Length: 477
Image (cartoon, rainbow, N blue to C red; front, side):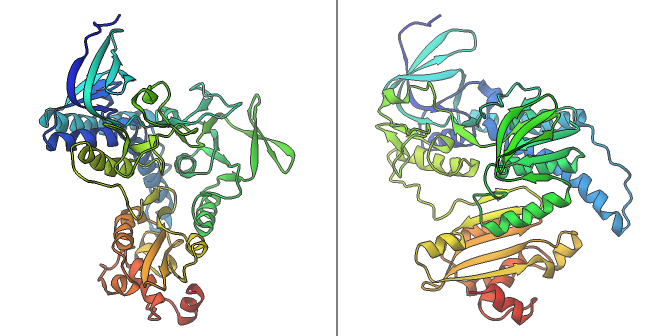
């Protein structure tokens, strides 16, 4: 049923209540705009994929898995904890409490800024008009002065492995499990597949990761993938590279490697090959916005996709990361409110909550050399870190990429415990054009993993402190 053809006139429309959408709504309200936020699940959907079925739930699962694994590993240090069985049903209750609390927090922030939240699915039918299908089956219309579209992304499916939520799962299904499977095949060795595979292995599931390309974490520097791959092997995870998925059989998955087909046992199959922008059936073409063949919306530096229309987050080119969406939200809301703004970051940091953790910021050595830069590289090993020793996690490194011509840090790549917490410092160093002397001269607290950044800088300056001179010279080019 259509609730009249008369549209309600509104000032600012936000479509999507995830990290990009609610951040845009809050910033627009701060600028004095009257904001209506349309979220398909209403207030219960605030926080979006990240809060409700992605970033937060996955890190909750990873935290439980890491704690169990670390307790068992520290038996050598005198800690006796027994088998440490995991009750996933209780985990779900705990995790859901975290998620609901964060979602209510977002709702409270929006309410404080007088943002009106409408439950429904939006479809644009004119450059300044949207139809919203309401949960009760009715349709209402809004005519807006400006709009921000932040509808996010959804898991990709794989031909021959259609998700059924029972045997073939996506990442959302895994994070909702109340029982651990005995065996799992994870398809994809990108960050989602590695994170989920690592957590399940630490919880006691037999895990096989199948990847079409030739390395783990193939989008990152090869040295990072090698360290993570060795860790997966120590956890008992079987990694099958250069593999093509043929399909399911009665007891698992059939893959082809080097033209030879093989069977891999699997009670469950997790497809984690990436995500696609959620732009289908949005009607964005009616606004004058242009979509690429992959479904992403083409935007200018100010995040405008058409007159009065901005697009942000996973539906735009670039990494599909919550912190990118949040940063774009500020630019979009301000651009649509008459301010001159550009989204032009030097770097967007990437983090993988694997074992060990990975933080990657800026250019790789290979990319920098391909750009013709005179590059220097130093890699400080965590085997020389006192804090890494106390954590029982001494494999990893801090790797700095420096442009000699400008004496600036252009890349920071970290592998080790807790390095996700150092991504911000690394991003700041690259954004501000810090020199190795800047990093070396910044006092880092001891004993912490953060010291590895200043230690790598000292190596570049020829003043290595905790590695031998010959090790320093081999690591610097």
